[in-house]
Image (cartoon, rainbow, N blue to C red; front, side, top):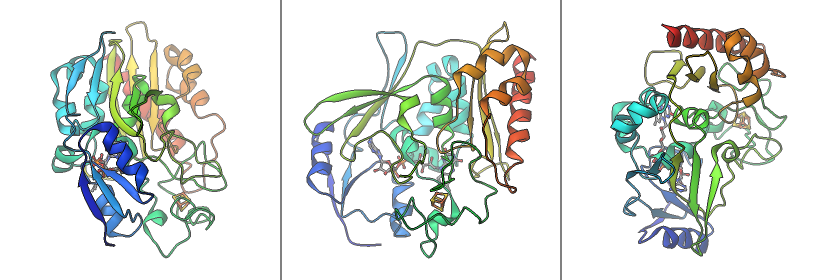
Length: 316
Ligand SMILES: Cc1cc2nc3c(=O)[nH]c(=O)nc-3n(C[C@H](O)[C@H](O)[C@H](O)COP(=O)(O)OP(=O)(O)OC[C@H]3O[C@@H](n4cnc5c(N)ncnc54)[C@H](O)[C@@H]3O)c2cc1C
Ligand code: SF4
């Protein structure tokens, strides 16, 4: 690991200002992703701004009838929150499908949204990777691609976003609240938060480098049966090959987002009109234009079957 300096931030705006002042600075929350990346020298921040002491660890009701989740709320606490379990079951289930108990005790809401891809070439510093080193090439294209994206890919990158929580946030229409070094705040709808790779796969979100996430808000509950199904190579401690976050209403209408298929949680609202017709009709639209490789084409029927199973579960 390369040497770095460290400070504990005193307020959200001061944390953002501290990162703004130092070009090599990064925020650190639970550290469960960033420290791994530092050990492998995939990321080498020169200064860490610790945001754990900023009192951003509360879950509170909003005036609109939703919930405001502080950026530092631990994944375990969020999954266990009574209001989340009752009104946003898909979120609780997605969180519990991720990582391990120990990791969830440490991992935060903001850090989870910002975790980096699990593409094996991104982790192998001997291999070209446009995300790790812009312009160096993509080793996955023409390489081993079983885990990779099938839709929304580009000639520069075919990585997936690994978060389970983010898929549930997308189906719930969450919004990300941030603060800048000068104290200005903004709200980014989750639909606009994660980017597709395009020509710049190293730019993964709509955040500025010195912009701190302060919270994530959930709108008023929409009810329905809320399901998260994660298909993976082993029963725990593995990232999704395909995951489905579904909210199904009594009349068969609903919402669906997929994980494990794209560079961001994948949702196409127009496809949801087909929910009453079943999984085949929905996935035909949701995954229209998919460009899988010969190694990951299995993700298309897998997504359809995972959604079909979720719909059966919702009706039972
Ligand atoms: C073995 C293992 C298995 C895992 N399995 C899964 C899984 O199955 N599913 C899953 O979803 N996840 C999984 N994870 C990932 C885990 O959920 C993430 O590592 C975790 O959520 C990251 O949160 P953190 O608080 O530790 O982030 P950190 O590592 O502290 O930070 C991550 C990034 O977010 C930035 N950041 C942190 N807080 C803020 C903020 N407030 N504002 C702006 N930027 C910020 C940091 O600068 C850094 O770039 C796994 C991790 C490991 C190590
Ligand atoms: S898919 Fe993306 S992360 Fe993986 S090697 Fe290619 S550029 Fe890097």
